[in-house]
Length: 384
Ligand SMILES: Nc1nc2c(ncn2[C@@H]2O[C@H](COP(=O)(O)OP(=O)(O)OP(=O)(O)O)[C@@H](O)[C@H]2O)c(=O)[nH]1
Ligand SMILES: [Mg+2]
Image: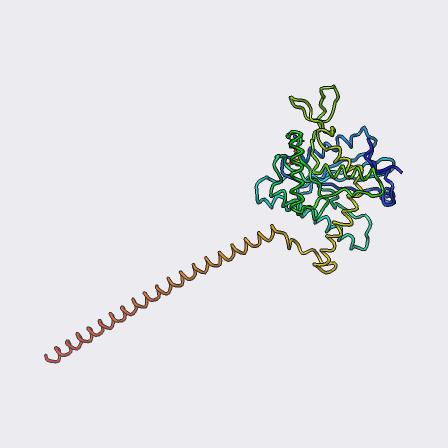
């Protein structure tokens, strides 16, 4: 049997040996990948590069390619169907809008984490239905996380997001725009990123090393060593100094080639995704990430009960806390205003009472004077 080493062309899965692969091969595979990262790092470009290098019409795949915009999350869903030797792959790529690079911008990335959870949730709910065929399934099998090629290290925001993603999906970190760093800087940067990932306990996808297959094990080790994959994305055909036409980016010093392994790890990444590890990504998602989600949900709610929406969503908690604070402040301000008004009323009442008393005593005095006058008048008229 042939080993799952990267073949020069073709999806490669059709050739895979073991039993599970045969079963999946019969049904066809449904593979969903997602790109995540700061704005402008080349996520959309990488997707297009994948499509224009691997899934081009001159390869013998049948391809249906359409885009769908999810209004709620603003993700773009691109679907394609690949077929090779009667082995079908339904490929779904989810392009997400990049978030800003400023600190504390939870609002922009928590929808992405929610999206992943929501797909698990939707699948779980469908599993609980009596008719369990024909499920719509957008569970993410591979999530590419784009790292800005700063040459320094991971940013706190990267660490925070990667931690959350790593516990939910097969997380594959990539160094974006590798052509903007020198080859040596890429090596150093990748090493630093690996160190931070290890130190921070970020979970990333590790290609499994098969003990019974030497060349596959070697391939897996080579892939693992290349993580985070450095990427050059481009859909442009450019001409190299030696006259070849390749996908790449043109510079004064020459061409940065997408598919040249000395320039970047694009081929390794593509091989992992589309050729050698697609089925492993699918089965680890089912057996590990989906199962984790399912178990967690089973522990926190009764069977069939709807998801308690956003209970442990930090963004929601923060908002709730802010609302509560604002509400308390408003109540306090209102109370103070009321007390002031009450005091003002009491003072006014006192003042009026005093006025009234004064008016009363004035009346009494006038009455007394009147009495006196009357008495004087009576005495006078009596004398006459
Ligand atoms: N130098 C270099 N530029 C790249 C590369 N990939 C993409 N770009 C350029 O970077 C810019 C942004 O690329 P996009 O693919 O739109 O980036 P994005 O991550 O999808 O951005 P958002 O959708 O805003 O999150 C474009 O001008 C691309 O041509 C790369 O590998 N190297
Ligand atoms: Mg984009």
